[in-house]
Each structure stands twice: as structure tokens, then as C-alpha cells.
Image (cartoon, rainbow, N blue to C red):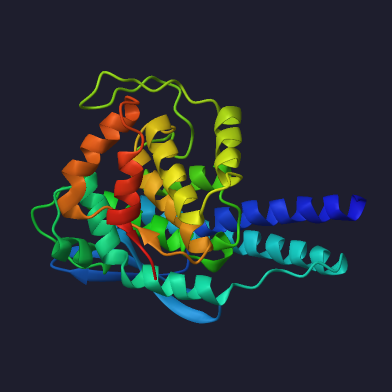
Length: 310
């Protein structure tokens, strides 16, 4: 029993370090210029493959943040290697990524632009599919506010985070939920990734959610995870729970969708995305769900109109 507890403790530490590592933007910095503006890209290796990621428009603060993150990443990677050595001494064998999960990752990546565009429309961001694609690829767009562009960039970073194999092998829990919100709201709120401590109102209804309590949220998420229902139904339960609970000060719908998809993809079961043309219908059903007038229709809507199997 003592050995098992030690392994569990080391795995928990590794999970926390892995999540932290994958929230960092780090690597070799490249600055590209276009029409008198500077843009930052980073080059980094993942699983031996060299990748390039667009970060954002140049600023001294952002440049220095990436440099600091790169140093932090080196320390975290060293700590993870030390933990893996300790696990090896205890004869622990790490799980490998299941083939169906790998296929699901590719499926999600192929649909990433479309999925982020749909999330942007749901959030009321003034964008087109073409503009969303340009932002994700680091191109220039016109007639969009800086805030809307950053929301799409943050969605990209959050999706890249949950599609990392190491993240997909971690439990779908409260810690992961907070990290997703932190990425979603990065640059907008100092309290990004932390449960809200102030009341909020919901547009279109007089219903108000209670203040969230961390211990209750953790218990509720565990209860959903242990329900005797299908993985698709569990992902829908996760999605609706986070939306209705309004755990964070902002970005709850975006956080809920990505959190639910992390669980779904970790099971190799596809993805959920709300079609742009169904946004208004979804919002109506969501209000009815909030007010406990109809808790069934929205689940059918999500399962039969928003769920995409591989």
C-alpha cells in the first residue's frame, strides 16, 4: 500500500507539472514584420518534431514573458524527468496513447478552425470563418477588435493544450478545468483560472447561479465521472454543468466546451461543436435548462445536432 501511495503522489505531481508546462508559451523566438507591424512566433520541439506557433503582435512584455517561460519550461522538464526516474525505480509503467485517441486527435485537429469559429459565433465574436482561419494561422485580419482577435488566439492555445497527448492522459478534473479557463481568459482577467467570488447575472433570464464552492465542484465532477451513462452523455453533462454553474468570472461556455471535448477525445469518441446556424436555438434551450423548465431537450440537441463521431 505504501508503494501505491508513493506512485499516486508522484503521478499527481507529474500531472500538475505537465499541465503547467503545457500552459506556457515558450521556445526559440522569431519576430516577423508585415506592414510596419511586428509579430512573434516561437519554434519548439514536441515529441522530437519541430513546431512553429504564432503567439501575437509584438510587445516588450510579451517578448520578455516568452523568455521567462522558456527558462521555467527547462526547470519543469527537468523536474518531470526526475519524477519519471523515481516512477521507474518503483516499476511503474506509463500508459501509452491508445490508437483510437490518436485518431481522435487528428480528427479534432482537422476540424479545429471550424470548431473555434463555431465557439466564436456562440460567444458573439464578430468574425467570419475566413478571418478565424487567418488568425489561427497568424495572418492579418481587418475590421476586428483586438479583444476579439485575442479571444480566438486564446481558443487556439486552449485547444492545442487539450490535444497534447500528455494532457489527454491526465484525469478530467477540477485542476484541468481551471487550467483551460486560464488559457481562455489569458490577458483579460487577473483571476483567470480561479473560481469567481462575485455574483453574476445571465442575459435573457432572471435566474442567477450561486457562488461556486471548490469542494462542491470537485464532488460534482466526480459524480458525473462515475455515472452509469455513456462517455458521450458524460461529456454533455460536463458541458452543461460548467455552463450552468458559472464557475469563472467569464469564458464559461468556451471553457465548458473545451473541457467536455478533452474528456470525449480522451475516450476516442469524437468532438462536440455547436453549429453556427444553431446558435440561437442552443441559447434558448440553455436558458430553459438554467431555469429548470426543460432539462432534456438541450441534451438531445447536443447529442444529435452537435456531436460528431469519428
